[in-house]
Amino acid sequence: MNLSAQANRLVLLALTGQAIAYALSILMARRLGLAGFESYVVASAIFILLATMAPLGSEKYTLRQMPALLQHGDWGRARGFLHFGLRRTLFTATASAITVGLWTALTNTRDPEIARAILVTCLSLPAGALVHYALELLTAAGRPFRALAIFRVFVPATVLTLTALGFALGLPVTGAVAIGFWGLAWLAALALMALSLRQAVDPRLFTASPTHDRRTWRRESRPFFGYRASLALLAQAGIIALELLAPEKSALGAYAAAMATTAMATVLATA
Image 1 (tube, one colour):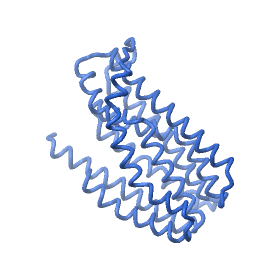
Image 2 (cartoon, helix red, strand yellow):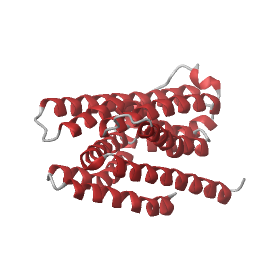
Image 3 (cartoon, helix red, strand yellow):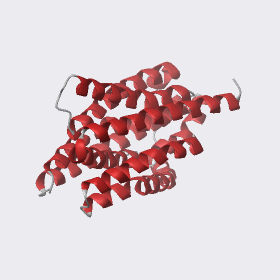
Image 4 (spheres, helix red, strand yellow):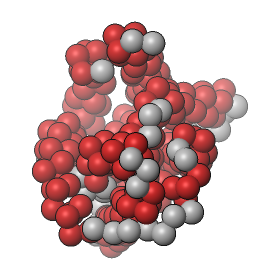
């Protein structure tokens, strides 16, 4: 398959995933009500911001470093780099989740429903951040279509299915419950990513003695962290700022709906 055909497949996959995510946003906006949708939107924005920043740039750096290590059969260094990225992501995500969770639990919030949704998103943050890292890791291992299918299609499709079933069965689906569905989807996606990575790389990667060069890896991943952090802040700062300014709930909901709509064009331009 030539590069153009591969690119077209990835574009189609990204658009499919974005269409599912858009349908999910519409469902949430219509069924959760103003308070429920506000808590869902705020907790989702915090999750995306923290999960994107958790690898500290090591996920994008993986696309530069890992393919060469695998191609040259440098299994010890490849395993060391794998440990470096996974541990960095897990530690940062866990520390961020604990910090935000404690801050939410200990401070007086004007809306308990938002607080519950944020606490649930903190619980799902480590798994979600690892999936964000695994997306680039599986891509670097030569499985970009499978990585994107899990990340862009499987995860939102799972959440949409669980949410639709919840509403159909008459369950009390709130913003916090909807965020919990995302947590379950991230856990399932993490298992699929791990299984796919096992199948994609040479088994010698997992048996070699790891070789580390953490100082170099930290230094060279910093520009990628700056890039990822700036994008995450630009995308999510508006929602978080609106929440802190305490506008009408309908204003935040309208802003989130508009962002979800324009995201279709953004995915088409970048996929």
